[in-house]
Image (cartoon, rainbow, N blue to C red):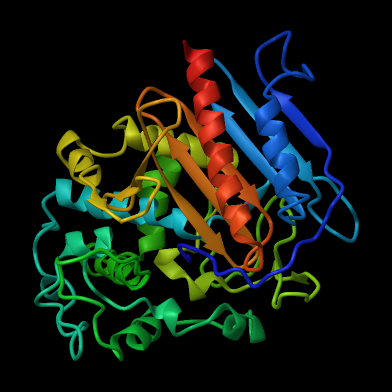
Length: 381
């Protein structure tokens, strides 16, 4: 849901043994295999303070899952490699994929105004007659982010409360735009709330139903779900934790109503399913060529690491050369990231802490994804 978590401080040192599953016959459990990945996972669950972490990485030849730390700080149960977790803003590529499929079906026009599909919804300080569908998906709309005004602390006070999408949009629209539409870039979860509303208006079905029909079922993503108002994470999963203050103890926030994120971040998935989804997306299995090209037409974000944002999908340069495509994700209790290359490498990472992890946690999650993808590049070659 939240693009960049704002650290609320602190670190929890957790004893972190790293375990591995999968791999090619004969070397799946070699203790010298992937030492940098093992080091990063250990760091995430010691220095960075996350209770547990996992990475699943795959290429055309093998799948590898590594875990570190614990799923539950009370029972000390280890993280399972097949864990489900809340993926936060990694929901956005799912939503953008559905919108672009509708574009391919000529039911939506990317450069048409939002007003065409949601008449009268975006008015006042912000004007849907001047904002296009493309700008919603690319964060170039200038719409204020509703999460600027709805803080994690406020959500934690009543974690099971239902949040209506229109009410969340109204929170944002009560404030002036951050810039004139199309003249800048700034991450805004509000755009994806509107994209979810657009899907429902055009299809007559909720965005969740369309994601299930168009993405989850065709790809066989059995560990991926659209929970709606349900606070339950189905299947094996770690507890999700937040740190509500710099020196505060961890708070178990596993049970939360994900309607507070809606189409900006409600999806539950697994490392395996995220890799399958991102791999299929960037290799053209979900979108027609014209729409995939539009998704991959990026706008600079100004980040020093070279990140650029397409339509629900961002690109970053790999240390070993080339680009990878993916997204980050933060939802209360979890921080995630996934990436894929067009030649068939994928990696997904999860830590069961957020908000409250240090900035180093985000940096090490990114380093883990990039290390896994570069290791896959060496294996591929």
